[in-house]
Image (cartoon, rainbow, N blue to C red; front, side):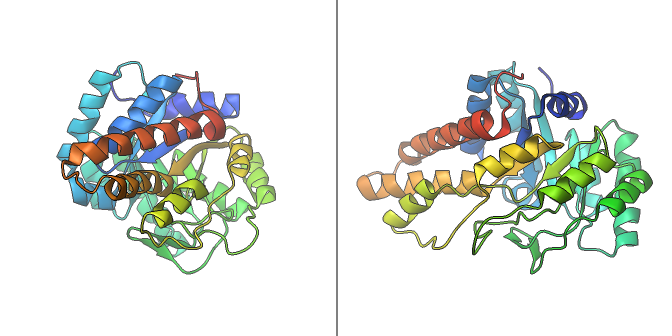
Length: 308
């Protein structure tokens, strides 16, 4: 199956009140683990490439890994998406390079500048049949180049104006999630009333939830047990994410959880097998850890098993 855009994928998710997982990729093992999980669960999937991953691995390498993944698991519906595109130039390069979806993140800009930048990307992308995600509001926290010291929640009325004026195809909203592994100091709270209002004002319109890793404590504990220092990390409870998927959220981003699963596995292996220096010895179980974690997300959080 060739790469597809998210249009039909999200329409089905909206009707079925589930979400499609957007999993960040950085190397071969992560791509393999995600694709193997999606194939086992018979689920659509979004392979998400951040600006940092693009710089680290190279766009050509990433697209060749995707090409190999499609050949290996041809029955999995796959979207390749640019996560947090910082400017028009990077979005255009990804569109021209074969991505089927891009995000332009102008959320840090004044409102009118965000509108203008998003509209510019939309015009370029739509002329080439590519989907555009945008963002309104700010998520606190740090992940790669994306950083904010404060939450700015998405205003429902402004969301309608933004979508109408930009023509963006999906919208990432801020309702209390945050980037990185340290999302909540106290009780986890998401503003579901705000989400419901945005969804009511934008009926059948696909919303996106960023900063949605759950930061499983089993991986945090495993990292720390084998020499890590991941203290106080807390994510979004999975039942909250599942509820969001029933309220118009068609795409849920997962990055931190992949990093934790991979790193915890590698740390444990190298401590328990100090004689190993062959990367295949510790990357094989790390790939399996990614696969199992992603399969769990697909089945129990996204609700997209069997939807391929």
